[in-house]
Length: 494
Image 1 (tube, rainbow, N blue to C red):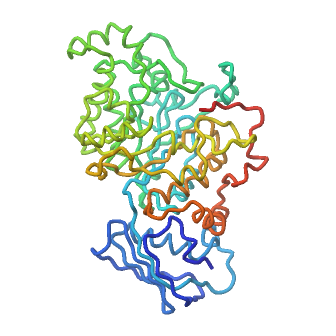
Image 2 (image 1 turned 90 degrees about the horizontal axis):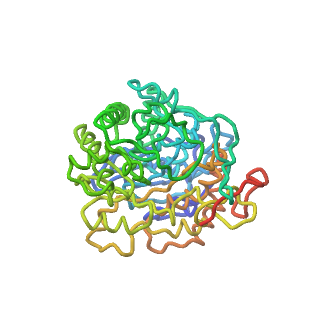
Image 3 (image 1 turned 120 degrees about the vertical axis):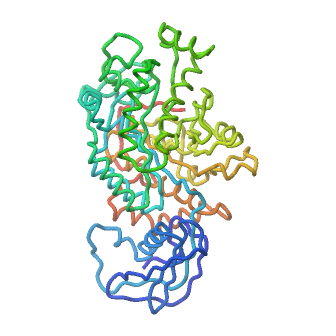
């Protein structure tokens, strides 16, 4: 039996009694709803007579059920129960509610495609940690993953590449594996994923990245680009100069894409990307120069803002808000309700929130889970900044430089799982866990009295067994298993 001390994320308030509730089978608690609790909040009461849940809403009732599942023990996280004998629960009361309403994870399925059944599994893991936003990065230079009936070549051509860059060679050479890679989700697949996530109170935020990170689309429809060159779907990682052109036809193309996206995804937010947009092709494009003259622009960066604003306005007609990476702050032309994802650091989040924009904090210096998690010599393909489990647990989503009157503009935070170097679900498991468990507590629980040592005790004594039961191939705290290493494949440290 798991004691109340083993719950993760840590609840707001716990009152524990010495008694134990015993039943032959896992109990189906009585659920009532009340306005007296905060949104997504719940009160779980366990006595010797039974289990009761009071909840603010359906989400709160669901999170109470996840807490109850933890209290039953790791066996409740298996696909089929192996439990023998009676079920026991500690008696007491838990009252709980999340600190932030955006408790998100980005999963990049563009660089390396993740089959649908593995996305279901990823959603199940999120739900067990009370996370509620799955940001799906669906398009990039290396692949287009969502079927758009009006433009079948996006997946027929843009959905696969002839190889992938293996690691990051220190001499800059491009060593490819020569193995074709691809895949995409049909419209029904995506509707199914949306419905599956919704049942677990998770909203999927789809991302169609523009006007950069778009070579897969240009490979499928060359008229979207700035040159007459037939480009391949990119096999390399990094910033790419091949971006979309600024013609009316390209804008209309993407409006049609977004019409399909909003038909499939019923959440209030759609991500337009907007990151890493080198403007060298626009500088050399007569068509871009003409567009700038028409709009009275003096800088190609303004074209970047104009491009995003055209599509954001189209989303607004559908009643949706746009989300963009923090470069769109520099580009200008933002809609008043645009949400900024602050990824290059915390300063963009401070600027955006202070100027009246809602913000999701996701700085690469703290919450990029594809970045290396130790300086261990066997760490597989070590890239980016060092983010230990303790580092992630110590992250504070409210920037210290943000004045208190703007704190409410921080919707929450989002961990990022980019997959350039995570080429299969086992690699994703290794990179994500147990650090995502630490992140889940950061965005759910109060920071008051937070102790990494206490968290690690709960993790080791209780929660790792739950991950084992779910089949999560996490990184051991002492370093990778031999089969989790990638000898001879170099990374790039920061």
